[in-house]
Image (tube, rainbow, N blue to C red; front, side):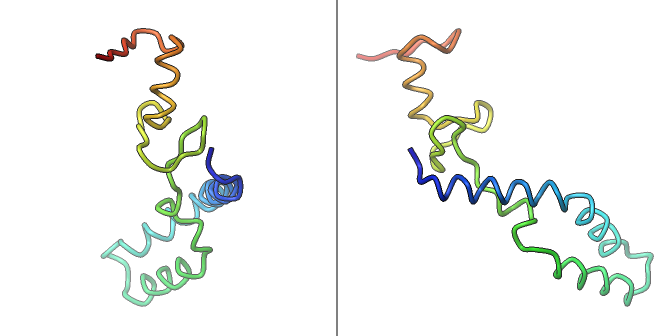
Length: 101
């Protein structure tokens, strides 16, 4: 099990990303629009820099839904390889055949 503080911090970052997603998208569109004047685009960049750093989607760490483990994460299953193995051994994942020899 991962540290509770790390998991909770990641939850706070996810909340901030969701809260500022529309504003960030709008400012990025303005900043990347080459038909607008340079000063307007620069102002959009400055406003984007004023937003909290943790509101950027790249700050979110993929973690296992079950244990909170940050490494060996399968995106499609939203869990780590260890959790997948444990659930597979218990027969809780339909269609998964765990082989061992």
